[in-house]
Image (cartoon, rainbow, N blue to C red; front, side, top):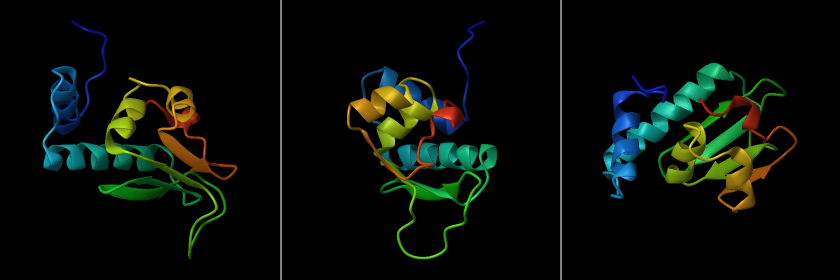
Length: 117
């Protein structure tokens, strides 16, 4: 039996499709992104950081000062494939930031303590 983590059926399906060198179905990719965002929100509850994965989802998470209006002071934004890679540990936070795949602003916008999920 493999020691590799298994994720929800949707996330695992998208990972398998990516491993095969194929492009995942848009709806499956959307659902996988949302599953992993929900997982992050449950593991790091709060409203001080907004995590955006356009066009599929955005959440607020991590304890701290609550954001209520306008652009929040702590924002993380990335594309869906990069989100899957960092959320599942296939790529580290640092690798993705260094490669310019993540835009993070604000003092709380480092998700590395919470990843991989």
